Image (tube, rainbow, N blue to C red; front, side, top):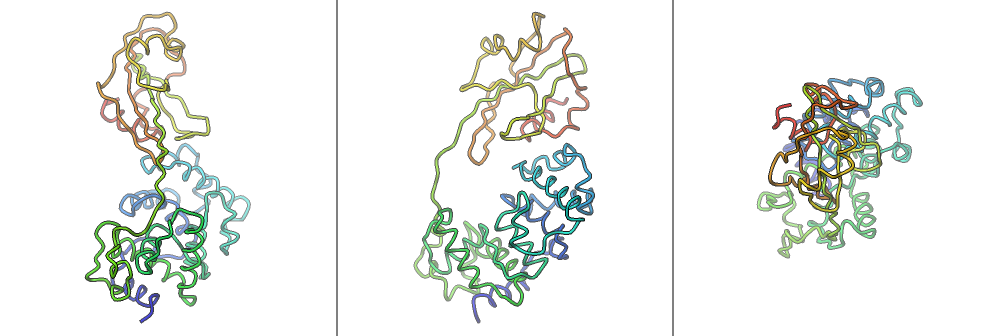
Length: 345
């Protein structure tokens, strides 16, 4: 039996029953694929169900306020995905009459849609034989064929795309694409692949050469940026202060407490003298205390955010406040949400 037929035969027996596999509607396929970028199925599934309940059609998503969409997305991370999702929903609803492009090339023109997502939608919704290549596919192909070309190099991206395109079942590309991704997620998993029960183990070069844990090869980039965030949690009776992040940076359009960003951790004396704090309290008396002795390190893909929360209590007038009881209605980064939950705003 060929590689492709073996993969699809395995899939028919072992596949997980997931809601987006019960449809070929491009709206639902698009939603699921955007949500599952950089996200495990177990984490993404509840969000998919929340979104399809709140926004059954692309018109519903397009009509929603961006803040509402970001709030529903809260905790899933990589918030540019949510902003692009909303932008593209509006484009499809308003410019395309609610109809998704039906080809890989046209799908690629949508904001937030890259090679992988365009291939998934084109094959599953429109039966176009265009191969998907995600982390699962890289792993299956590199191990089975014994390929040590780095998957995050230009050469590797091109090579694996061409190989997947040669292997795809042109009569049923939707099933093949879903099958090879599922095979990588369940059977040929990163750390504990089920090699002894694998239907492809007779021809797997990585298994033969004892290189399962060495493949796929990925170039490691050690360019982690360290940032130091000091949040000012204003306590003014029943009110506090939130601000929206406007700049093109992490968490764009989400809300947070007034922020002092520095190149290192700051102590109490340094915080008390900062202009960002004095602009809020003016010359009025205030009490300042650090919420926790240790900084919280919030790890993103290329950044580590060292975060401290400083409680600022003042009875003087404070501008642009919100009720503390309403803070949890705003879309905020997960580290802010965790603090609010713990601090019991």
